[in-house]
Length: 106
Image (tube, helix red, strand yellow):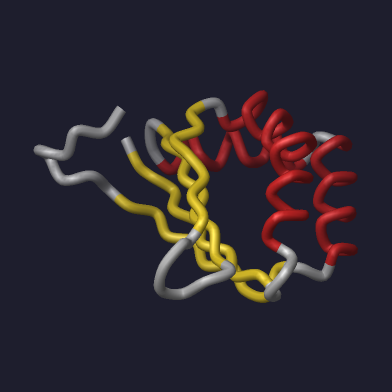
């Protein structure tokens, strides 16, 4: 199993609007394609205006296949285009992580 850890940095004042849009529009599409949603977390202390989105996959090939399917979905394309129009996201950082053998991951 691998974990995809995505950190998004937002312009101040835009996180809540993005969260609502993602919850109602983006997440349902991603759940159809990506399957294993671990969680979405919002910074409270420290580096503010950030979210961390975590998904798990069987391996890199599984991730590639699932994300390809999502990218081909017209609903996802429409969602992403509408997200860019919000002009909210300043930075995106994606890490693929392997759990340690003793990590209690799902």
